[in-house]
Length: 363
Image 1: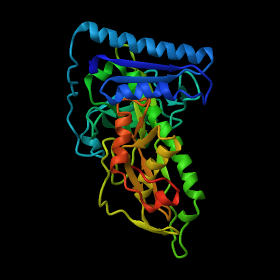
Image 2 (image 1 turned 135 degrees about the vertical axis):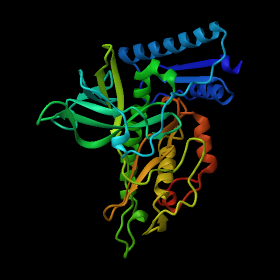
Image 3 (image 1 turned 180 degrees about the vertical axis):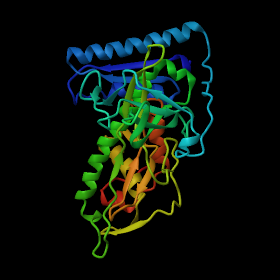
Image 4 (image 1 turned 45 degrees about the vertical axis):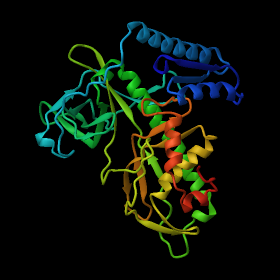
């Protein structure tokens, strides 16, 4: 019965209304192996319409799967040749797109949540993207990408601006729901970016996280990349899109995961603050802890990965592709809900940073 049961909960009321019992029912279904989905519809007609439409779509999908009497098949990975690194430009076959190319940024303040923005370079009129990936994650492939402009000295095109990264699903089946893939990714990354800004402010205000008398470095800010969609028209006239973000130069490291993994003995540099000597990576794990506490134990940001930019006297963590685990499971495929939250609580060990922020012990 587990795989055939889905519990839907919808709360109709103003922001701050207590739907704890309804959330409890949905969480209970999730904990016992079924599907659970809670939506806060608000009071406006637009919000109610969107919520009813979302639930109706989910129910239709569930009914179709049950009536088909088929078990879920494992997803099929795309076929690709992995490149050794990003910079072997001359060896990589490229695909060029110049027809009706536009650039869009995710903005959750508007509906639909996409805002058209300018190209990174004023002269750009399209892009080139590698046909083979140079990186692979659990859900996505990474490709070399850059904007192009018309060659001012003759025919053809030439690269303009900095190197970028295009990301695509690793599975063939996801080609059928490209818009959802893009929306889930950008929504998670933007939410993580907003939470990181709040965390950075909390760190700056904490007296015990001020540099000690002889320390020249300050606590490292945490920053998540902003992602964009490059929309274009392919040779068949179909509208397509590519998810694109800045390329991170430096040693790429996976610091944590949504399964409870935490990088141990990472050899991280340390700084001396009023609270004592702390590792720079302690701020990353404290960030996850802080989000969990600040959200009243309803969500956390994990699967932290990226680089530590050590240029200057203030190192900065530049991160990408996080997972947000929430009780409502609103943040895509890597949001494994309460199980991801429990995984973090099980393996997290508080550091002096957690204590300096007055975060309660996990457990």
